Amino acid sequence: MDSLNLPIVVEVFQFVEQLCPYPCDIVHDQTASFEPLYKYIFNLYSKAKPAIIEMKDGRRSIYGFKNAISISFADSKKQPLIRAADYALAGARKFVQLAIAGEPISEEITRIAFCNLGALLMAAFTIKFPTLEPMPELAKAMASNEWLNKVFGRLQLELKTIL
Image (cartoon, rainbow, N blue to C red; front, side, top):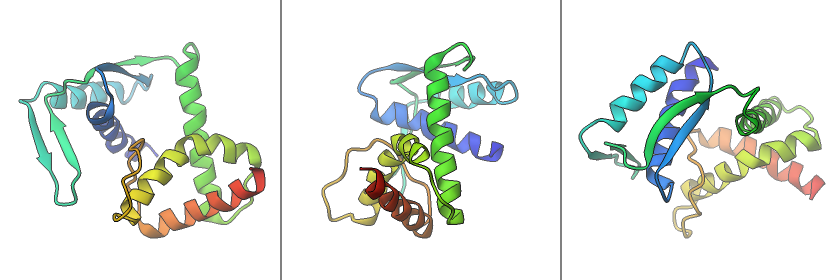
């Protein structure tokens, strides 16, 4: 999972910069081995000459941040909001693992996972059905259609049993 941390953190920076309605600070769980790298990458983007790179598929990468003011780190054992984010992400990760493996998923895991997967589901609908009105952008999905179909098909089944 460590190899995914850097691209995900860069996406978080871009998400905050592009979608937050006001300037804010980014607080990440303390990770001694990654903190210097996260700070370095954040500074590359935030202190860069203002620019926007638009990709052929419409995604944008912004440099010279205005909304993402800073990055800091907090101990999840001392900061309840960081701990809550850890639990929500762990629930989503567990749901995806079980869905891909075709294993049973408990109601608790489904409820915890929906916090994150619900936002990804809206992003997936926007990608899969471009003729529909765009969904509110609460997350970005970087996944294959096969993965999206398997995970969100399973989410739909699990939600039917608990709602």
